[in-house]
Image 1 (cartoon, rainbow, N blue to C red):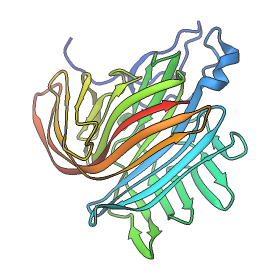
Image 2: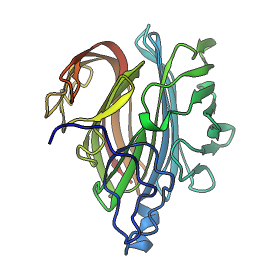
Image 3: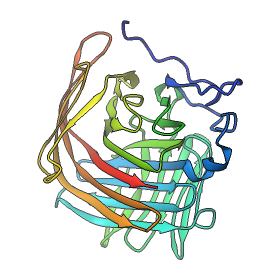
Length: 327
């Protein structure tokens, strides 16, 4: 079948007959509810995972912020990687109680909040922008991120590894504001922001490899793991296109060595050169998380699935990840 534009996103995650609307789409699913799925209702609260993530990519630094609700617990992180010095200038990572510390709205690019003592991370949907604030000892941030045009958003709904999972990814977005850490202020006006809003019913044991980078009209989101190839896409001239299964070739014993990333259909050929990384290895008895997320540059090319035109990728700032969660 010849490649074509992705179809419009459905109005809900589950059809009236209780059948999930599995597929890859352009647009935003307005109703993020799994209530119409048959059976297993008592288990869903434990398996329901939601998160809101934002990244800010710049020639000199990269910032990642997230609020995560895993059903019975909540967490958040906020970091600033200084690309000039190749080190983490700020790295906040905390866990809290559900409902009390963490709230994530059932809406793509909506409200999400984490509070623990004086530490606070908050996403707020405000009309045509998303407002993000971070107030921790390690990092302060105040940003306005333009809400993406619906036809530039990737929406994916897939069986995943338990019942079903949905995710919305944006391309590069305009933003403004500042971040502060270590006595230095970082202007966000020249950053390319990107968003990830995910909501699903996932297995207790979940693994993935991931790569993401966006700038201007070009970008990509690639994953191998619990979503299969259901969220693999490239953005060319601002339009998301589906690509094949992602293959990640890297040395797990030395993840700061170069990574080779390609898609099975030949649309993606990338070399990722890490400049540093953030990592974690938590064991909280009921839950555990082991990950490494290198920050660095991508070089290579993306091939337009319809026209065959090659788009060069040169020194594109982004991240990769090797992650295993028991949640």
